[in-house]
Amino acid sequence: MAFHSGFVCILGRPNAGKSTLLNALVGEKLAIISPKPQTTRNRIQGIIHLPKLGKRSGAQIVLVDTPGVHKPDSSLGRKMMVEVREALEACDLILLILDVTKKLAREDQFALQMAQQTMTPVFLLLNKIDLLKDKRSLLPLIAGYQSLHDFKEVIPLSALKKDGLDLLLEKVVSALPVGPAYFPEDQLTDQPARFMAAEIIREKVLLDTKEEVPHATTVVVDQFEEGPKLTRIAATIYCERDGQKAILVGKGGQMLKKIGTAARHNIERLLNSKVFLELYVKVQPGWRDSRAFVDELDWRRQLANLAVSPPPED
Ligand code: GDP
Ligand code: MG
Image (tube, rainbow, N blue to C red):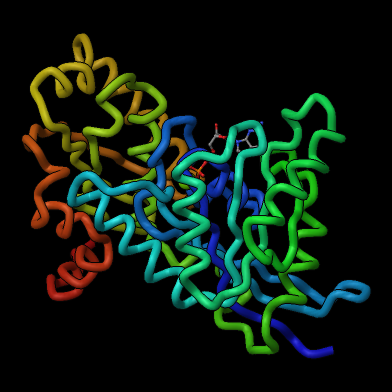
């Protein structure tokens, strides 16, 4: 049986469960997850390597997690939507994910429209079925959704409880074209460790702070040096106001310490190396509306900049 491969985009409104699904499918924590919307700001790719199994042929699925679809209201928001469009155009299959516990909202319609504007086949995933008291309520929901678009498949699942994922994988593999493995088998993501480190720090900020602070922050890794025994990382958490900085630093630096410790443990597990992490907090008023600053955050650009500087000496 021929090997199948292709790029699969996960699309859906903020909080639908895109990152949870990606992590569940890849089996590792690649995308950060939090109950707050707009946690994912960049494209994240997860790579699934599937051996041939019964009737299912061997396959490699490259998953692209997109920032939640929303109407952009800032430079950052616009940049996120450009990422979504680019990803959709280039992929073989779109997984449109809806939260079954929520009514179909404008953001879902917007996501559906984005999918419809491409020629790419779409699977509709009805997520969070673990929260449904009565599974029979799914049937009218499915019928209702099927009238919106000619979905190639409609699959109810729970990304959190990993329910329905085997069926999903089977259907995805058969929808993908015959093709080669694009990535080596031991590779799970194309994200540089440096970017992952910034995302992990941002996740701890999201988990530990409230109200406007999470959305007003971004993390830039200023230094990332992998030595034989230790990885040295220095990162800056940018926020927009002095008040936010005060919250992020906390009384006697306690909050920053808490964020730093949690992030360090996580990064150590990811890199399988001891980590020395230095964290700074800086105020950069209105960074979300500054094109130049948002462009600077782009990790591809950060990497390109790094490539021209000499490697660190050990
Ligand atoms: P994203 O914004 O679409 O990437 O959504 P996330 O993956 O970050 O998930 C948003 C929230 O929904 C998190 O609190 C998840 O734990 C929760 N969630 C995701 N999938 C499920 C699911 O299948 N069942 C339940 N009960 N919660 C889920
Ligand atoms: Mg996400």
